[in-house]
Length: 273
Ligand code: C5P
Image (cartoon, rainbow, N blue to C red; front, side):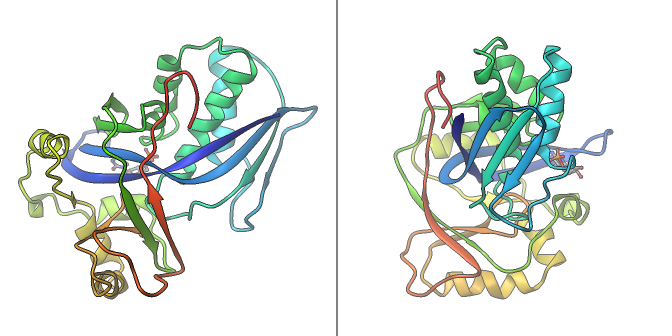
């Protein structure tokens, strides 16, 4: 049996460049893996089975884990049955990439069970066929991502940093947030300059998806304010939400239905996280 961590991601900044003809949005974002993670175990078996510790986690073929299994079969020509167990800790509809991470971890796990026949660069490319956020997980854990998110440039790890991740009860579906985006109402940040500021240790946190998310779910405004009232210097939506990343304070009370302190993590390129 192979047991792997499947980490969450946060976006330290997220710039939307524009809308593409294929309906996706061109973006530039600094992705960071954090030590909030699910635990996945994998075993070849006589029949396919997906089990999860959480009841609100679909285990049917719509789950991205099965999409990863089917994609690996199609691309590699290998046939197999897999038993996957998920110990779920990353909240869903949170903008933390939990489903994408599970699917990326599954691709890596199957390849590992077969003795690594497929180069990681191929897995990273295949991953983009499942979703825009998967390819990032094949990076070092810190990456500048462009295109629709699938063009990944690994970066040196940042100094170890902690961030609070807090989620209210309500969640957000990514397509709705993108649909609610007003391209004419974006701050004209230059993402390459922002990236350089992070590398120079002068971070400038922003997320172009925050405004449309707050407009879609106005209750998020008071949730954000309650986090600012804790004394955090930075409170920003993670990805398409509805969780927030909070920096610069230690909270005095519990925050939302989910909150945790998470550290940045990275991986050596000969292993998983
Ligand atoms: O790629 P993924 O399946 O994760 O994307 C989910 C949805 O989010 C897409 O169908 C699209 O509506 C939106 N999206 C987008 N631009 C991106 C990534 C996602 O518009 N770069």
